[in-house]
Length: 351
Image (cartoon, rainbow, N blue to C red; front, top):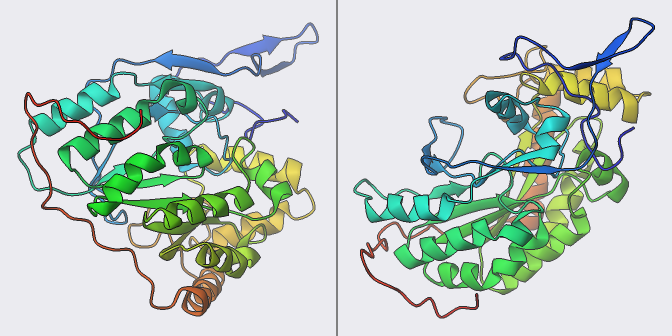
């Protein structure tokens, strides 16, 4: 096992004609595994705000200052996007992180020239904008400062407590109804979390993040995601209760789906981490998606269908009604946007 990593192999990139392998004198080939250190590769992005065409996503635009994610979540659907950069969706996704240092400048340019209908932007939507390197680079913080400057609404999703560093900005945005935050919690079991999401903070610490943000007046929703039958599905009530006790305004969930290379990566991980139940878990996942591990059906792919998906939906609904009845995320102000051409605006917040 490769410690501190989710994926245990580099799967083939379908866009490449050749694979790197290690040749042995015995005539056997195995995938070439480089050293386990993380590399940061700078990209000069041409734009940072992207239109989201999926009807399953509540927000119409997204922006991602990083591609690839050191968190190493084994189930991450974003792994597939790493292949477009010429890398593997496996180990490469976790240790070859593409950094868009010019993201803040691109965002400001976008808002200066903005002429369309104001709709909240999802931050990030693909890979976590608060992954470890953000502590050093501060790209996400600079982007938040620009969003506050222009009074533009944003929805955030993360599983890293580093978001608390930017509580001052988020608090100012919350006063103007310009932000809501989604904290993803897959499990409260630290042992399971370290297997599923090896370089993330524990579920208990994410609950603390919910409390601290809620106490600061920032609207927070808990994302119980993804739910993996046979791994964490039984934790739904406990997660929702803990989030509710911490002040969460709402809850949502997604059932795991294993599209593209993620199916091979997840299956390999599952057989190594849980050999006794691997086949059963894979069968239960498939039962939620018409007998397949992958699911691209709009309207169905996030929640699935079939008996197991229905039981998960029922358990989630009962738990939410019991612990969060009457709570809701406040609507964001879509009319506060102000252009700031040529203006230096003081934010009155700590740097």
